Length: 224
Ligand SMILES: O=C(O)c1ccccc1N[C@@H]1O[C@H](COP(=O)(O)O)[C@@H](O)[C@H]1O
Image (tube, rainbow, N blue to C red; front, side, top):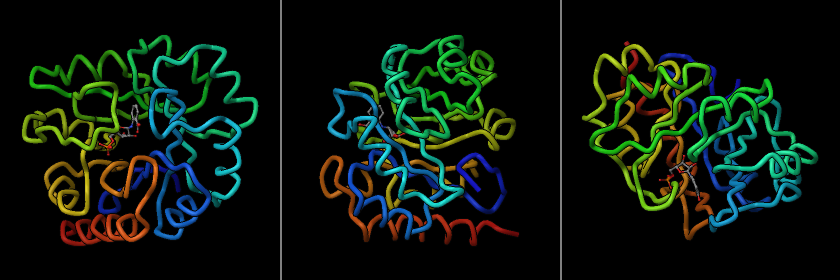
């Protein structure tokens, strides 16, 4: 179905920062909807386009291959596109709406926001209204993947009601807090990296399975 197929009561799941065939196969076996590949060289989860391509070849139809970029150049995009069949782009840097439109080149894209205390939700969703989805992450040192949650209570209820079908929630999610996040926000999808890791870039297969089980349990608990 893919990450952005909104279905109330069935929260989609993206696991980000996959680097090995074993972890990719385990994520797929757990029932993931999307796998994220980090094309940001400073990240400990960075993968080359060639490695991403070999991991994407293991994905069944319907599982999105998400290309995570941070202020990537045209040349970087060309290098990725040349070998890796990305189905969805995640802009996680300071890209403008025009940058996202131009670089995505007609493919679907998500814009990540780093949410701090003064975050202007309406301004963000208006500015990036051409995005297929809005990813909410914590405002942390660097650009992301820090395993730190933000204050979900600070998201205005009206904004959530208006945008839930396009919201991907991330930032410090794990097996212990994801059910609460779903019960409060009912996002289209959740996105996790650090919360299912043994160490940066190495996934814990049990935690990936338990995370998706926790999502399914939260969905069941909030269905009418
Ligand atoms: O994973 C990274 O290394 C990364 C680097 C730069 C930008 C974003 C990155 N990851 C994304 O960050 C969020 C939150 O991750 P976490 O669960 O808190 O570790 C998620 O969207 C990742 O895709």
